[in-house]
Length: 175
Image 1 (tube, one colour):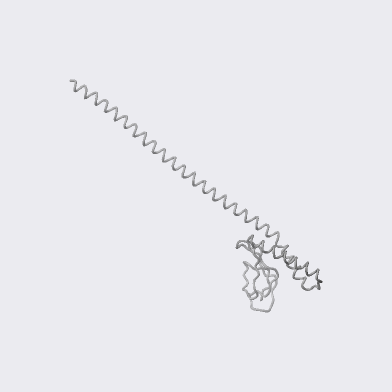
Image 2: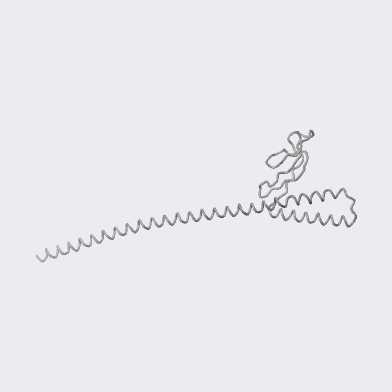
């Protein structure tokens, strides 16, 4: 009888242990599920952060380009004026002082041009005979001479900033 009582007690203890093991297993499963949920939330948060970071970087690049473009657009007329002044001075009879002054102006113009090239702004001067391309050229006049559809002459150079046309070259086109 003692054995039977001992077996019953042991069976009762075994049942309690089995219940406790089942409870622990359920808790482990629950914790594993919560862990997966948290891992997924973390992955999503990291992806959202990366997307936000990339978006902010693109916006900053665009803002930087737009600032440079605005600066270029405001300076181009001054560069045009300097070019016209230097070109027009060739028809003047300048004394030595005037020639020295003009030489200084030309040096300033060259320095500005180099600075703007370093900044990414490049002057575009199409050659005579180049095929007219409305993406980079603006026709300001047409002449009956030359090959039809080709550039006959240049009115004003174009400007390109980082492969983006800021101002098309203003050209005379053959009919």
